[in-house]
Amino acid sequence: MLTFHSERTKKRDAMTELDGGRLVRPFECPERVDIIIDRVRATDLGEIRAPEEYGLDPVLAIHDAGYVHFLERAWDDWSAAGMEGEAIPTIWPTRRMRGDVIPDTIAGEIGYYALAAETSLCAGTFEAAQASTDIALSALDHVMATGNPAFGLCRPPGHHAAVDQYGGYCFFNNAAIAAQRALDRGAAKVAVLDIDFHHGNGTQDIFYDRDDVLFVSLHGDPRQEFPFFLGHADETGTGAGRGFNVNYPLPSGTGYADWSETLDEAIARVHRYQPDLLIVSVGVDTFEHDPISSFRLISEDFTDIGRRLRRAGMPTLFLMEGGYAIAEIGINTVNLLSGFDSA
Ligand code: OKP
Ligand code: ZN
Image 1: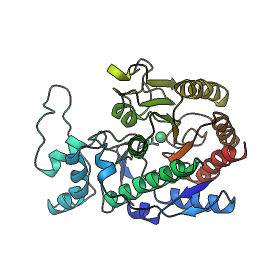
Image 2: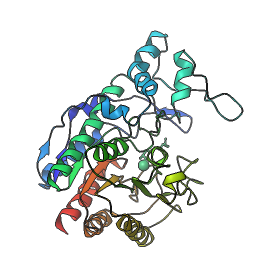
Image 3: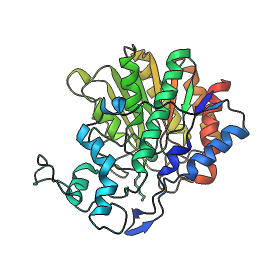
Image 4: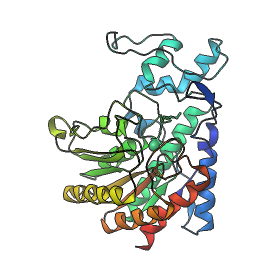
């Protein structure tokens, strides 16, 4: 299948992630893209194409304009305020405070728009986030034009980004932006199947009251895992969206026997929905050696995931989300894609 890739995604190269009380180099680093693209080349997965540029309109179809323009200027405002490190929030509008007045100074604004503190803002973040979205949209347009599958090698990832919040390494919700464009271009129903280790809180929240996008996710139980405050099984959608959100939280230590049985259930739910398009939020952080996750999938399992997804028999767009075992990220990602192609 075709891969969409851009060196522009590497414009984000943050120095810091707040991890266990220390500042470490981020797990979500630009080499992730290099290693995956090397593997795409080495295995002859298919042609690699550069994305088109779509501008901000499709981003603004999902995200709040104040949020988007905050991200565009946040690094400059932070530097201009004399801050010497990367931009990290230290206070949020939590319970018992006001969430309805947006501060007008960077130290307050950043707490308003961030959902977590691990993700530092740095120079190049906005440009990389836009490149990531351009990749998702270009891959989408290929699937819609041909009916053939495509892989958007998005980076930074997107599934934690909500209407007006960034965090969990995510800024623009690529899967949501692609789903909305598919609907705007004539699809009646889109399913998003999120197989990243972490719950896609942003994607869920964006479509929670809608029945034109089905969101189905397999992930580490939020009682134990990031993002902690969303992703439980009783979150099934609201209003017109009731029944169109499906969460499968799984315990830490889950191996492929249980995970794949759950995947089959998830695929069956997607199948009943009969979407015009399936978007797969691909995380390979379910891998046994992932440094920040706790499932136990092995490299061969990813090939089998691809085969099972192919049997679902739908036009399919793959978009990259997480995966932090850098040495194996290329093998695991391309195993999934080639499993799909060869089935
Ligand atoms: C993003 B995606 C280690 C804990 C980091 C944030 C996880 C973000 C995952 N510092 N917690 O879903 O792969
Ligand atoms: Zn993840």
